Length: 447
Image (cartoon, rainbow, N blue to C red; front, side, top):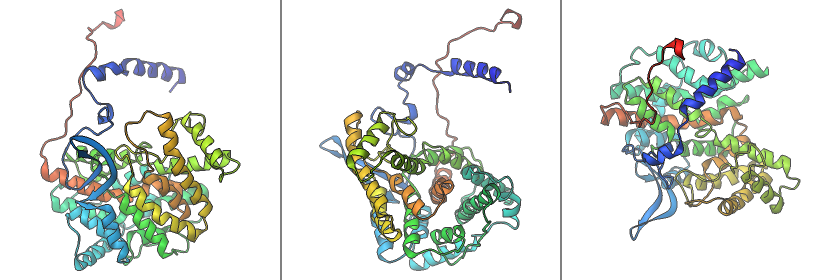
């Protein structure tokens, strides 16, 4: 398309679609479905999970330490349970979110075996789908692969709960393969690196298989598997009100198939305002190191963070990435849990200096934000602040950061999809208030 023509047409799009901010106030419309306090507007009910960031004290809403509960169980208690028992927790937590209760030892063993049996792709799928047109954008590759898997399913459009559950379990099982194989194909065809297609071991956990398939030698340490497993557990679900879970509810309400629903959720998660925050943290820290002569100097680090807030560094957005959350105020429980093991991984990998830099930024950033921004709640590190550091130490490429988020969140999406199908028989149809001016038709020769 001619550039000048496109520019003209774009100007028309902007002119006739921009809405005065006053209209939102006059019509009591909350942009982003958030009220003036930044709280999400209530759009549904769920029994899958919940976030607690404030409590009522003497009739007043008071910020509290953040809580995340999966099916009513505090995620801290949940993680402590499988960690103290020396188990990896992804499969156990997936069972909890899908079926509403913790599995017995026998149920967990059977569930692990069920996921292991399905951890394989259709014959020639890697060659015919994943190796075709590999691209750096792993999320689009994931969506394409998911939609193609629907073509292999003769019951793709059956939205009965038994069938949707079976489809969900298959997708949970193969998501790690789709993500890792997609990266290896991109790395081979576009970076001319060796191509590794390691088969998963049905006896291993999801986290162990990811590391096994990703690495040329298929080797990993127990702490590496443990912290990746913890990352997957902490990213698995988050209250139902996040963008991709809401997308899952909206698309499921139309009666469409599982594959289309999950592809839509992937499109939502791909957005940099949702699933790509840990990449921005890593980029921010690299930019800090490139522009600070002494990263052990609190003064220099403080100066850099101040420049970030003043839109004078990195991308000019004025954000310190990894700090703050749309819901949590005093703390993000996921970040608290993650940090404990991040320190252990840093010690094992000889990354203590880098970890101390992260700790310094974690300590300084909330102070600076409070000084320079008018905020209605506290600021603390979120789960993305340390996850990028962990993935880098584990040797996971940036292209896989958001796909790994999807590998975890497919469990939450599946639970929300079934919840929507069970409880609602109406398509979600929100209302939009028209604020356009009336005009009449003008014959073409008079325009």
